[in-house]
Image 1 (tube, rainbow, N blue to C red):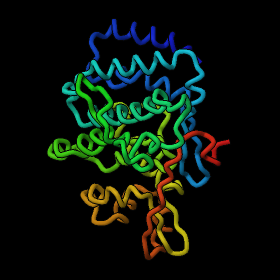
Image 2 (cartoon, rainbow, N blue to C red; image 1 turned 120 degrees about the vertical axis):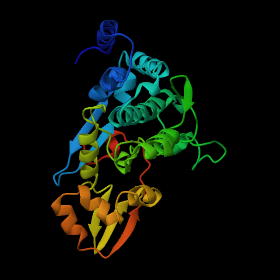
Image 3 (cartoon, rainbow, N blue to C red; image 1 turned 180 degrees about the vertical axis):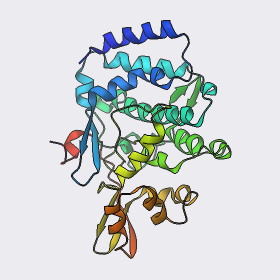
Length: 281
């Protein structure tokens, strides 16, 4: 495994050769890619699903993690999102930004020096006297402070993207809120070249993963994402079942046809650490 500081030097060399950071998403997110490569664990499931966990403890104990986080934040603070000219560039950029900021916040904001048990420990559900981490404008993109909700709801699924035909409900299976109940974070960053394929793959994987979809006793149990963001899915399909059928494999669609009712799965907000996934050895 290449030392993080050496990778940082290589990145600076690359930037010197290629000029200012523009819409080259793979370059802008090189530091995030390193963190994913080193600390994200993917575990395929027998039925075609996937779970993943981020090894925050390993990242915190490693030399160079602080530098990677700092340099990635600086790259985003210095990046002009107006240079994102295509749907693929913009979608890949904002998905990466959301996922990086979420993971970085957990690594850097540790009450009493330890990791939180859940993202709600920062405020909101368990601490109603403080705004939750999704609402606070804590993250700098191009000199503008943005929130996680702002990235997901106001940008990726906001009016500007909708008017351009860029809004895509599949992003709900690509942003990761660092919780067990979230669709899995992937080990590679999004790029303009891979984002469409990964959005489809992530959505299909989610529908084969029991944290997001399962069938029991004639009931279709679905992630609460379908409850919270129903309008986004119905903007692209006549029903929730129709949306699922567009991406799920035949085994899942076959099971879905045996169900007569839908219930939503209680979201598991525990931090997405390896020990919270029994599927990960």
